[in-house]
Image (cartoon, rainbow, N blue to C red; front, side, top):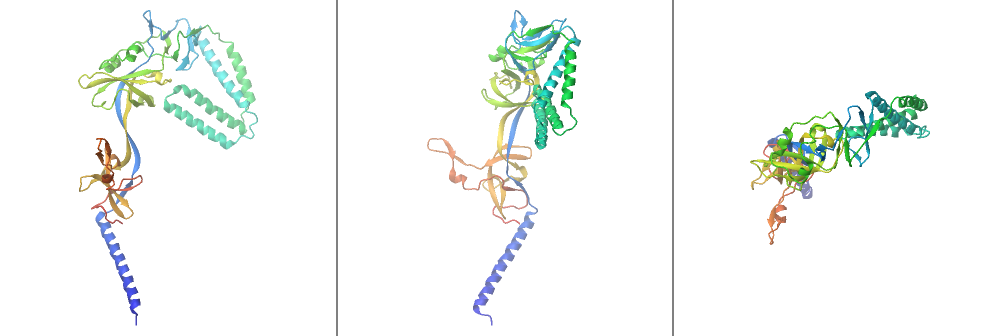
Length: 436
């Protein structure tokens, strides 16, 4: 005979088992009704809104005295000019800009001697490092990889003036490893050979004279024929009319074979372009924007919205101001530019995940364990197949008329959080339902 106590235990176990069976079949039914679910995680994302334009760069390179542009460095046809400065180098008044020679052959010998001097200096620096038997080869390998990365970064930045230094650094580190590992690199023999060649080459040229700067600024070794087009002072004084961007771009350049470079008097320069008022609605005077020049591989140049012209039809002319200068920026003129005018930061969500509940709120279904939870979102940007969204917030006005968060209304729903599992695909999904 089974006691009443044992009967109760058996009945209790059967009841629990029955509930488990019911839950199993319920979950199975739900799984079949929803089909195969697909998920994506809520991840942080920034979408940049860009304005693509074509504009004209104006620099302080058209100073005129007695009807002549003194920013341009004119040469004598009987002389060969060799700059002694890198492009975009800072120069002061009376600094030497270039030296002259009587022939191309003389100039080439001089340039060869400078290359040999640089090579000799590198070799002597390597020798002066002392005994290299204890050099950590792992460290040397790492420094070589870093030198390669530095070279790639220099190329990407567009700062071509740094390429020689990047190459020299790489060669120096490879040579150091050759010495340290005894790879047949005879440094003393190398130094002796370079000294002998340098001494011979130095006897084959004679410097004829020097060209000095008449004022301070930045040296650039070539010209593009547009230096005369627009007065720098006019732009600085905001004398830029509507549609002037197109006029500047259409201006014919004046090629001048009698110049070997120019002086840019100030590091501040301007970029002028025309655009529609619709596209430029978010551009405001005084705002800062980030500009890319994709054709020149120049990225993330910070510029200030310096001036916006009056409206002519749907067109305005915008002047951007930049206070940075390097070799690549000094050579910009008529350029395509991508201007980042606004950033949208939030969670990137697939369009297929967006749903609307009975209250008309847009949101997503989030899987919390084995249950579904409707989570409303605030959409700030609509992409082609996605949106950028943030946490759902309800606002109200306080007694003083200020916009404040309605805490009670906001807390009515769960907020979307980083790494939430968002249901992107599934059938008959409902808030609170059980999923497999």
